[in-house]
Image (cartoon, rainbow, N blue to C red; front, side, top):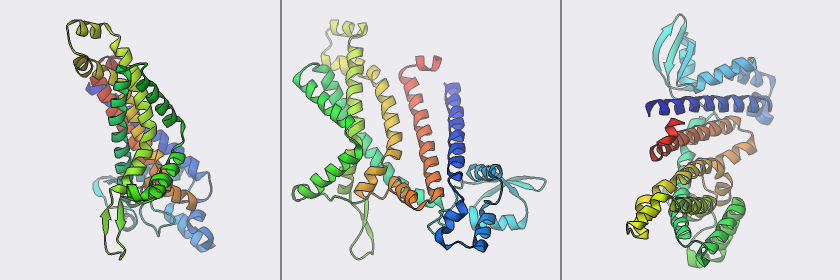
Length: 357
C-alpha cells in the first residue's frame, strides 16, 4: 500500500512540473511582462528597473529557473548581504538550511510572485483571501450533488423503468446539457428577482457582506444557496446516472442473488452489500467534479458576484495580471492532483485489485 501511495505522489509531482512548465512558457510568450506591469505609464527607465528587479532581462531559460526556484519549498540563493536584504524585503521570509560555497539553501513557502496591477500585493495573499470562498462554494455544491445524486440514483435503480425512473432520467439529461452560465442567469433572475418576495434571496451576493456603514462584515449564508445549487446541477445529474447504472450492474451479480435467497430484505441487500461496490465509479466522478469545481466556478462566481478565486481570475484576465492567473492555475492544479491521489487511495481501499494493476 505504501509503495502504491508513493508511486501516485511521484507521478503527481511529474504532472505538477508539467503544468508549471506549460503555463510559464505559455504566458511568457504572450508579451513582455514588464510592459504589462507598467501598462500605459511606461518609460525606458521604469522599464529597465522592472526588468532588472524581476529578472525579465535574462534569457527565458534563466527566467524559468528563477520561477522554479521561487516555487520550490527549498530554494538556492546567493549568500551576499544584498541578496539577504532582497529576500527579506521583496520576496519572502525563510529559514536558512545550509550553505555550499557562496550559495545558501533556504526553506520557505512557495513564492507565487506579486500582482502586476494591485500595487505589488503578493499573489499568495490574494489567493488566500479568495480561495476559501471558492472552497466553501465547491464543497457545498458537491455535498448537495452527493446527497441527492446517490439517493435519487438508488431509488431510480430500485424502481427501474417506472414513471419515477423516467422522470429522473429526463431531469438528469437536462442537468447535463444546460450550460452552467445559463442556469446561473436563470436561477438568479427567477429566485432572486421574480420570486424574491417569497424566497428572500438576492440576485448577487458573497459569503461575507460589509454593513451599510462599512464598519464590519457578516456572514450571509443565504447568498450561498443559489450559486451552490447551480454549480451542483451538472455533477448531480452525472452522479444520478452513474449510481443508477452501477447499482443495476451490481444487483445482477451472483452474490446479490444469494443474499436475496437467504431471505434478506431489499433494504439490507442494497445497504449492506450492493452500495459499497456500486460506489467505485461514483467516487471517481465525485473527485473529478470537486476538483473541476474549483476551476469551473468562474462563470458562477462572476454572475452571482461571489468573491472567490474564479471571479479573481476573470478580473486578472481583464487586466492581464499574469502572476495572479499563473498562481491560480498552479494552486488549482495542485489541489486537483492532491484530490485525485486521495481518491485513488480510497478507490484502492474499496477495491484492493486496483493496487495490483
